[in-house]
Length: 106
Image (cartoon, rainbow, N blue to C red; front, side, top):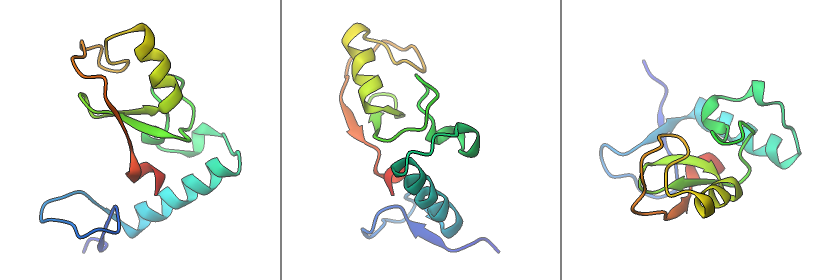
């Protein structure tokens, strides 16, 4: 059987929404603790924890709303000052809104 599903946030989850297992939640907690302590060995973390621009562990992950891709906030802001394209998919952006990625911050 699969491990129990835990909500990503401590809010009620509507049916069919994203959730994480207790093992994944534990990994996210370990990730957050190691980033806060200054640990930067990127080989220890899944690629989803690395900024696609710098390939460094993200400390302040933000989602580019139009594409859904996550980047380190400061790196994404710098990129968007110079380019109107997604740094990962290279699609032209009509919306450059960024929002915090709370799932990676848990």
